[in-house]
Image (cartoon, rainbow, N blue to C red):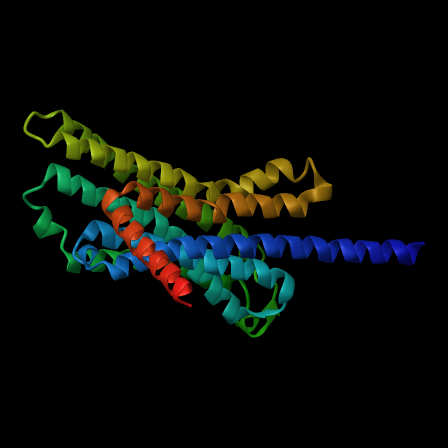
Length: 311
Protein backbone atom coordinates (compact mmCIF):
# COMPACT_ATOMS: atom_id res chain seq x y z
CA UNK A 1 0.00 0.00 0.00
CA UNK A 2 2.80 2.42 0.94
CA UNK A 3 4.72 1.69 -2.28
CA UNK A 4 1.54 2.25 -4.35
CA UNK A 5 0.87 5.58 -2.65
CA UNK A 6 4.50 6.62 -3.14
CA UNK A 7 4.33 5.71 -6.84
CA UNK A 8 1.10 7.67 -7.22
CA UNK A 9 2.66 10.65 -5.44
CA UNK A 10 5.68 10.61 -7.76
CA UNK A 11 3.48 10.32 -10.86
CA UNK A 12 1.31 13.19 -9.64
CA UNK A 13 4.42 15.29 -8.98
CA UNK A 14 5.81 14.74 -12.48
CA UNK A 15 2.40 15.31 -14.08
CA UNK A 16 2.06 18.60 -12.20
CA UNK A 17 5.57 19.69 -13.21
CA UNK A 18 4.90 18.78 -16.84
CA UNK A 19 1.61 20.71 -16.86
CA UNK A 20 3.28 23.83 -15.40
CA UNK A 21 6.19 23.74 -17.83
CA UNK A 22 3.94 23.05 -20.79
CA UNK A 23 1.66 25.98 -19.87
CA UNK A 24 4.46 28.50 -19.35
CA UNK A 25 6.44 27.41 -22.43
CA UNK A 26 3.29 27.54 -24.60
CA UNK A 27 2.40 30.99 -23.29
CA UNK A 28 5.99 32.12 -23.83
CA UNK A 29 5.92 30.90 -27.44
CA UNK A 30 2.62 32.72 -28.05
CA UNK A 31 3.96 35.97 -26.58
CA UNK A 32 7.23 35.71 -28.50
CA UNK A 33 5.38 34.98 -31.75
CA UNK A 34 2.95 37.90 -31.42
CA UNK A 35 5.67 40.32 -30.37
CA UNK A 36 7.84 38.97 -33.19
CA UNK A 37 5.15 40.14 -35.63
CA UNK A 38 5.59 43.69 -34.34
CA UNK A 39 9.38 43.46 -34.57
CA UNK A 40 9.20 42.14 -38.13
CA UNK A 41 6.77 44.92 -39.10
CA UNK A 42 9.14 47.55 -37.72
CA UNK A 43 12.23 46.29 -39.52
CA UNK A 44 10.36 45.70 -42.80
CA UNK A 45 8.92 49.25 -42.84
CA UNK A 46 11.59 51.93 -43.17
CA UNK A 47 9.05 54.66 -42.35
CA UNK A 48 9.54 53.82 -38.65
CA UNK A 49 13.34 54.05 -38.65
CA UNK A 50 13.51 57.83 -38.17
CA UNK A 51 10.66 58.20 -35.68
CA UNK A 52 11.79 58.19 -32.01
CA UNK A 53 8.32 57.13 -30.86
CA UNK A 54 8.42 53.91 -32.85
CA UNK A 55 12.05 53.24 -31.96
CA UNK A 56 11.16 53.42 -28.26
CA UNK A 57 8.09 51.28 -28.85
CA UNK A 58 10.01 48.51 -30.60
CA UNK A 59 12.62 48.65 -27.85
CA UNK A 60 9.78 48.03 -25.38
CA UNK A 61 8.62 45.02 -27.41
CA UNK A 62 12.12 43.51 -27.79
CA UNK A 63 12.83 44.10 -24.10
CA UNK A 64 9.64 42.28 -23.12
CA UNK A 65 10.58 39.40 -25.44
CA UNK A 66 13.91 39.11 -23.61
CA UNK A 67 12.12 39.23 -20.27
CA UNK A 68 9.72 36.45 -21.27
CA UNK A 69 12.48 34.28 -22.76
CA UNK A 70 14.69 34.40 -19.67
CA UNK A 71 11.75 34.12 -17.23
CA UNK A 72 10.46 31.01 -19.00
CA UNK A 73 14.01 29.60 -19.14
CA UNK A 74 14.45 30.10 -15.38
CA UNK A 75 11.08 28.49 -14.72
CA UNK A 76 11.94 25.39 -16.79
CA UNK A 77 15.42 25.21 -15.24
CA UNK A 78 13.81 25.04 -11.80
CA UNK A 79 12.54 21.57 -12.74
CA UNK A 80 15.10 20.35 -15.28
CA UNK A 81 18.40 21.72 -13.93
CA UNK A 82 18.45 22.32 -10.19
CA UNK A 83 22.23 22.57 -9.70
CA UNK A 84 23.14 25.60 -11.83
CA UNK A 85 26.67 27.07 -11.57
CA UNK A 86 26.30 30.27 -9.61
CA UNK A 87 28.08 32.62 -12.09
CA UNK A 88 25.76 31.45 -14.89
CA UNK A 89 22.71 31.74 -12.63
CA UNK A 90 23.68 35.25 -11.50
CA UNK A 91 24.09 36.32 -15.15
CA UNK A 92 20.60 35.07 -16.01
CA UNK A 93 19.09 36.79 -12.97
CA UNK A 94 20.80 40.10 -13.79
CA UNK A 95 19.55 40.04 -17.41
CA UNK A 96 16.01 39.18 -16.28
CA UNK A 97 15.99 41.86 -13.57
CA UNK A 98 17.37 44.46 -16.01
CA UNK A 99 14.70 43.68 -18.61
CA UNK A 100 12.09 43.92 -15.87
CA UNK A 101 13.27 47.39 -14.84
CA UNK A 102 13.61 48.56 -18.46
CA UNK A 103 9.88 48.33 -19.15
CA UNK A 104 8.69 51.17 -16.84
CA UNK A 105 11.74 53.26 -17.75
CA UNK A 106 10.92 52.91 -21.46
CA UNK A 107 7.28 53.84 -20.79
CA UNK A 108 8.50 56.99 -19.04
CA UNK A 109 10.71 57.82 -22.04
CA UNK A 110 7.77 57.35 -24.42
CA UNK A 111 5.63 59.66 -22.27
CA UNK A 112 8.31 62.36 -22.31
CA UNK A 113 8.55 62.08 -26.11
CA UNK A 114 4.79 62.66 -26.43
CA UNK A 115 5.02 65.60 -24.01
CA UNK A 116 7.72 67.25 -26.14
CA UNK A 117 5.78 66.57 -29.36
CA UNK A 118 2.64 68.32 -28.01
CA UNK A 119 3.96 70.98 -25.64
CA UNK A 120 7.17 71.89 -27.51
CA UNK A 121 6.40 71.02 -31.16
CA UNK A 122 8.90 73.54 -32.60
CA UNK A 123 11.76 71.89 -30.69
CA UNK A 124 10.62 68.29 -31.09
CA UNK A 125 12.80 67.54 -34.12
CA UNK A 126 15.82 69.06 -32.38
CA UNK A 127 15.35 67.31 -29.05
CA UNK A 128 13.95 63.94 -30.16
CA UNK A 129 16.46 62.84 -32.76
CA UNK A 130 17.25 59.25 -33.68
CA UNK A 131 20.74 59.54 -32.19
CA UNK A 132 19.42 60.89 -28.88
CA UNK A 133 16.79 58.15 -28.82
CA UNK A 134 19.46 55.46 -29.00
CA UNK A 135 21.43 57.29 -26.30
CA UNK A 136 18.29 57.24 -24.13
CA UNK A 137 17.90 53.50 -24.72
CA UNK A 138 21.54 53.01 -23.64
CA UNK A 139 20.85 55.05 -20.48
CA UNK A 140 17.74 52.95 -19.78
CA UNK A 141 19.84 49.77 -19.89
CA UNK A 142 22.53 51.41 -17.78
CA UNK A 143 20.03 52.45 -15.10
CA UNK A 144 18.08 49.19 -15.33
CA UNK A 145 21.12 47.00 -14.65
CA UNK A 146 22.01 48.81 -11.40
CA UNK A 147 19.72 46.79 -9.02
CA UNK A 148 20.99 43.47 -10.42
CA UNK A 149 24.61 44.53 -10.00
CA UNK A 150 23.94 45.73 -6.44
CA UNK A 151 22.41 42.33 -5.62
CA UNK A 152 25.55 40.63 -6.92
CA UNK A 153 27.84 42.99 -4.97
CA UNK A 154 25.85 42.40 -1.76
CA UNK A 155 26.13 38.64 -2.32
CA UNK A 156 29.92 38.88 -2.64
CA UNK A 157 30.07 40.95 0.58
CA UNK A 158 27.82 38.90 2.87
CA UNK A 159 29.07 35.51 1.66
CA UNK A 160 32.58 34.14 1.02
CA UNK A 161 33.86 34.41 -2.55
CA UNK A 162 34.03 30.62 -2.70
CA UNK A 163 30.25 30.65 -3.15
CA UNK A 164 30.82 31.61 -6.81
CA UNK A 165 32.41 28.20 -7.43
CA UNK A 166 29.33 26.33 -6.22
CA UNK A 167 26.11 25.26 -7.94
CA UNK A 168 22.63 25.93 -6.59
CA UNK A 169 18.93 26.22 -7.36
CA UNK A 170 18.67 29.26 -9.68
CA UNK A 171 16.15 31.56 -8.05
CA UNK A 172 16.49 35.18 -6.94
CA UNK A 173 14.52 34.49 -3.75
CA UNK A 174 17.02 31.76 -2.79
CA UNK A 175 20.26 33.25 -4.07
CA UNK A 176 19.51 36.75 -2.74
CA UNK A 177 17.89 35.71 0.54
CA UNK A 178 19.56 38.09 3.04
CA UNK A 179 17.80 40.99 4.72
CA UNK A 180 20.12 43.39 2.86
CA UNK A 181 18.81 42.10 -0.46
CA UNK A 182 15.23 42.49 0.73
CA UNK A 183 15.82 46.09 1.80
CA UNK A 184 17.62 46.86 -1.46
CA UNK A 185 14.79 45.35 -3.52
CA UNK A 186 12.11 47.33 -1.70
CA UNK A 187 14.08 50.57 -1.97
CA UNK A 188 14.83 50.16 -5.68
CA UNK A 189 11.29 49.14 -6.57
CA UNK A 190 9.93 52.13 -4.69
CA UNK A 191 12.46 54.51 -6.23
CA UNK A 192 11.97 53.34 -9.83
CA UNK A 193 8.17 53.23 -9.65
CA UNK A 194 8.00 56.64 -7.93
CA UNK A 195 10.19 58.33 -10.52
CA UNK A 196 8.23 56.80 -13.41
CA UNK A 197 4.87 57.76 -11.89
CA UNK A 198 6.04 61.35 -11.33
CA UNK A 199 7.10 61.55 -14.99
CA UNK A 200 3.78 60.11 -16.21
CA UNK A 201 1.67 62.43 -14.01
CA UNK A 202 3.73 65.49 -14.99
CA UNK A 203 3.58 64.78 -18.72
CA UNK A 204 -0.16 64.01 -18.59
CA UNK A 205 -0.91 67.26 -16.73
CA UNK A 206 1.18 69.28 -19.17
CA UNK A 207 -0.52 67.69 -22.18
CA UNK A 208 -3.92 68.25 -20.52
CA UNK A 209 -3.13 71.97 -20.20
CA UNK A 210 -1.96 72.07 -23.83
CA UNK A 211 -5.20 70.42 -24.96
CA UNK A 212 -7.23 73.24 -23.43
CA UNK A 213 -5.30 75.99 -25.17
CA UNK A 214 -6.94 77.42 -28.26
CA UNK A 215 -3.62 77.54 -30.11
CA UNK A 216 -2.82 73.89 -29.58
CA UNK A 217 -3.67 71.06 -31.94
CA UNK A 218 -6.48 69.61 -29.82
CA UNK A 219 -6.83 66.35 -31.72
CA UNK A 220 -3.11 65.59 -31.34
CA UNK A 221 -3.20 66.66 -27.69
CA UNK A 222 -6.13 64.36 -26.95
CA UNK A 223 -4.35 61.47 -28.64
CA UNK A 224 -1.27 62.19 -26.53
CA UNK A 225 -3.44 62.24 -23.39
CA UNK A 226 -4.84 58.82 -24.28
CA UNK A 227 -1.35 57.54 -25.03
CA UNK A 228 0.02 58.66 -21.66
CA UNK A 229 -3.01 57.20 -19.88
CA UNK A 230 -2.28 53.96 -21.71
CA UNK A 231 1.32 54.14 -20.48
CA UNK A 232 -0.12 54.43 -16.95
CA UNK A 233 -2.24 51.32 -17.50
CA UNK A 234 0.80 49.49 -18.89
CA UNK A 235 2.82 50.57 -15.86
CA UNK A 236 0.13 49.21 -13.52
CA UNK A 237 0.33 45.86 -15.33
CA UNK A 238 4.13 45.86 -15.03
CA UNK A 239 3.93 46.73 -11.32
CA UNK A 240 1.85 43.61 -10.66
CA UNK A 241 5.16 41.78 -10.30
CA UNK A 242 6.04 44.08 -7.37
CA UNK A 243 3.10 42.73 -5.36
CA UNK A 244 3.67 39.08 -6.28
CA UNK A 245 5.49 38.44 -2.99
CA UNK A 246 2.69 40.15 -1.04
CA UNK A 247 0.08 37.96 -2.75
CA UNK A 248 2.11 34.86 -1.89
CA UNK A 249 2.29 35.86 1.77
CA UNK A 250 -1.46 36.49 1.87
CA UNK A 251 -2.77 33.32 0.22
CA UNK A 252 -0.09 30.63 0.59
CA UNK A 253 -0.51 30.25 4.42
CA UNK A 254 -4.28 29.87 3.94
CA UNK A 255 -3.94 27.09 1.36
CA UNK A 256 -0.64 25.36 2.28
CA UNK A 257 -1.49 22.20 0.32
CA UNK A 258 -1.49 23.97 -3.05
CA UNK A 259 1.17 26.57 -2.30
CA UNK A 260 3.31 25.57 -5.29
CA UNK A 261 0.42 25.93 -7.71
CA UNK A 262 -0.58 29.26 -6.19
CA UNK A 263 2.97 30.58 -6.48
CA UNK A 264 3.19 29.40 -10.08
CA UNK A 265 -0.16 30.97 -11.02
CA UNK A 266 0.76 34.20 -9.25
CA UNK A 267 4.07 34.41 -11.14
CA UNK A 268 2.32 33.64 -14.43
CA UNK A 269 -0.33 36.34 -14.02
CA UNK A 270 1.93 39.05 -12.61
CA UNK A 271 5.12 38.51 -14.63
CA UNK A 272 4.40 36.77 -17.94
CA UNK A 273 0.87 37.71 -19.07
CA UNK A 274 1.39 41.52 -18.82
CA UNK A 275 4.27 41.19 -21.31
CA UNK A 276 1.72 40.13 -23.91
CA UNK A 277 -0.85 42.82 -23.18
CA UNK A 278 1.36 45.92 -23.04
CA UNK A 279 2.89 45.85 -26.56
CA UNK A 280 -0.23 44.31 -28.12
CA UNK A 281 -2.56 47.08 -26.93
CA UNK A 282 -0.23 49.87 -28.00
CA UNK A 283 0.72 48.34 -31.36
CA UNK A 284 -2.82 47.54 -32.50
CA UNK A 285 -4.04 50.95 -31.31
CA UNK A 286 -1.51 52.83 -33.44
CA UNK A 287 -3.16 53.21 -36.86
CA UNK A 288 0.06 53.61 -38.86
CA UNK A 289 1.75 50.63 -37.26
CA UNK A 290 -1.36 48.48 -37.55
CA UNK A 291 -1.74 49.47 -41.21
CA UNK A 292 1.81 48.36 -42.06
CA UNK A 293 1.50 45.17 -40.02
CA UNK A 294 -1.81 44.28 -41.65
CA UNK A 295 -0.41 44.99 -45.12
CA UNK A 296 2.75 42.96 -44.47
CA UNK A 297 1.04 39.84 -43.16
CA UNK A 298 -1.92 40.06 -45.54
CA UNK A 299 0.60 40.11 -48.41
CA UNK A 300 2.46 37.13 -46.98
CA UNK A 301 -0.78 35.19 -46.48
CA UNK A 302 -1.79 35.93 -50.08
CA UNK A 303 1.60 34.71 -51.36
CA UNK A 304 1.27 31.48 -49.37
CA UNK A 305 -2.23 30.88 -50.80
CA UNK A 306 -1.06 31.53 -54.37
CA UNK A 307 1.90 29.16 -53.98
CA UNK A 308 -0.30 26.42 -52.52
CA UNK A 309 -2.80 26.86 -55.38
CA UNK A 310 -0.05 26.61 -58.04
CA UNK A 311 1.24 23.46 -56.49
